[in-house]
Each structure stands twice: as structure tokens, then as C-alpha cells.
Image (cartoon, rainbow, N blue to C red; front, side):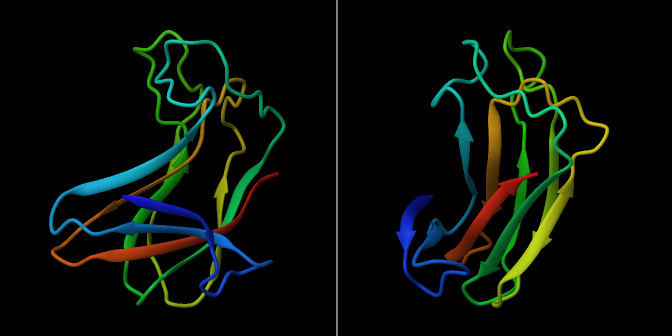
Length: 137
């Protein structure tokens, strides 16, 4: 998975967006934003997002039809400092920008260490996914 933080290919807002390129002919790849970076639940950290109600983001695929999973919270309870909530949505993306919302109401958001992730799977073809305006409200 290759991540471009400052992609200028048709961003939704502003001058740049995120671009994730997966070029392997088989398998899966993903990226996760963590606090602290690179920690899989062995260190304290994360954010208390209590009171938040939604995770919103804009996404599109290069061609349309790309499948990806988006969400927050992937560190499970077997780790000392795990995420207190795990939510995700499986999407089939359009070529055009579309806004998506994940409902966080009723979730324990007291410690979120992996605040956003994207996972995709290759089906023999390379794919590109674009993301912009990730907001937790």
C-alpha cells in the first residue's frame, strides 16, 4: 500500500487529498492512523472522543467499483491498551466523491488509539482510493 498525503488529483476540498494505491495482484493492504504512532496496544495513549456522534469522510475510487473498508478502532481487548470501540463500514466506491458517515452513538469512545483505517483487497488489478475531509463530530 502506498500512501500519498498530498495528492493533487481532483481533491474534494482544498488543494490536496489522500491517495492510497494498492498494486499487488493478490492479497490485502491497509493503513491505520494510530496514537501513539506504530503502537498496537502496548503503550498508553489515544484520544477520549466521548461525546462524539459520527465519523465522516469523503471517498472515491479511481475508476469506480473499488471495494474498501473504512473505520476506527482495530486494537482488540487482548492488548493492555486497546481501543474501547471498533466500528467500520464496507463500501463500493464511485468514481465521484461521496460523503460517508459512520454512526458512533452508543459506542465507548473513551480510548481510541486507531482513529481511522482503510483496508482494501486486490482482485488481480491495481486500485487507487482517494479520501478527503475526515472529521469526527
